[in-house]
Each structure stands twice: as structure tokens, then as C-alpha cells.
Image (cartoon, rainbow, N blue to C red):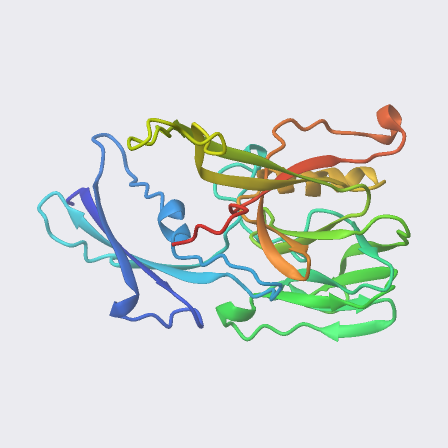
Length: 330
């Protein structure tokens, strides 16, 4: 029998339901030859697919998942297509998330239900929140005494569903698709903050879902100015004099970037996972002056705090707004 020599891989990326792709959805064609002495060919497609996940946010909480179908054609060392098992077709649901090293290779969301790491949520008193759920594994949620059924139509635009957590909720229970197996209980902490203005920061967490995180305590806003200068000649040739109100040094290319220093307020220990994911997030926004604005975490050092070592736990994080203060968008 001939041996495997070459694998040609076609990658289709599309929205809608699983398997609903066409030739127009073909985005990559890859080819690899098997290494002598090996029996498998490995394709790493995550970074290629990620380019097609559109990450935008305007306080709208949309499901940002896509379907990926791969079709692999196997050829033998006589350049003939294998008649058994070829082509091989596989379909995946892609999230813009990531795993940790200890999760090992290619972590999946097969055991995920709510798409957050924490079991506590902090909301300002009288403010509703959002809880991201994976519709393929969740049957229902009970928010206090109100039950919400979760249905999965198979469409990529509802694979991540954001359930509204009403203001002043105290507890959320998440159940599997059998509606009887309790998978997670989440405590909602309603914070009364009479002195400072709470700010809502939203980021893409490690599951690829939008997650809200409120900063309740002291906020400091600053901005850093950048500019350039040149020395000009102010002598008037006609009179061989110069005006004392005309400067020799002139500024140009002036701009600034505003920054925020935010404090979480006192939180429980298991919120450390959320703060870690916020530090690692590429896409972050803040609800600021009635607008959703992009920001970038600039704090680089992170110390894990515990009630044993630190008694009361507060995290301080620095952010830059992801745009210049003076509008130079062209």
C-alpha cells in the first residue's frame, strides 16, 4: 500500500449554521508534505482564523463566533489521492479566546457553561448587568426566583448569549441542558458607592466573550503631552529688527494621550482571575461620559492578593485611552 505524502487543506470561514459554507467562504488553501519517518501532518490554523473574527463593541454584546470547516485531501507518494478517508471534513466553532499553558494543547469549551472565570459579580446598586452563556451547554438560568430558558438554534450569532442580570439581583444559578444539573452558582454583590463614580470596563476574556468589570473607588485622570520644537528666524530684513513678542522657539506636532488610574474597591479573592484576564486582554473598553471608548491596560506588574496576606483586597490598574486627545484622524 502506498504511503501518505501530501495533505492539501482548504479552510472555510463563515457565519450562520454549521456546514452552511460555499466556495465564496474559502479563505485559505494550505499544503504540507509529511516529514520522513512521521505518520501525521500538523496544521496550526488558529492565528489564520482569528483574522476573520470581527471584534467591535459599542455596549451591544453580540456573539462574536464563527464557523470554521476544514477539508483535507490526502495524497500518497505516487501523487494519487487516497481513496479511503479522503477528503476529511471537520467543522469547529471559533472563539477569540485562549487557554493557559496548563490547559495543554488546543483547549475546548465543551465543559464551559457561563463564560466567566469568577463566581462573584460586583454591580452598582440599582444597575443591571450581563452574564455571557454558552448556549450549546446551558439549559436554563435561575436569577433569584426567575427562570430563563436558553435555546440553541445552531446559528453562530447566538452561540454566546448575554442574559440580563436585573438590578439588585442576589444570586444566579446556571444549569446544564438537562435543566436539572446545577453547574454553577454565582453571587451578585450590589455595591452602594456614595462617594466615587463607578466605571464599567468591558473586555474580551479568555473564553472569547465580553465581560464587564466595575471599578468603584478613586479614579485619577491625567494626560501626557508630546510635541516638537523648531527655532525660527524672527529678524525683519527691511528694518533689521525683531519683535519681542515673536518667539524664537515654535511648537508643532502637539498631541496628548489621556490616562486613567482606576481602583476596584474591596473584592473577594476569586476575582483575581478576572483581573488577570483584564491584564492580558487585547480588546478593552470603558463606559465614560456616556460613550463607549477604547482603552489599553498599561500596568505591567501584577501581584496576586489574598485575604491572608493583604486583609482587604483592592486592585489598582492604569489605562491609556486608545486615541489621541486632539483629533488627528485622517
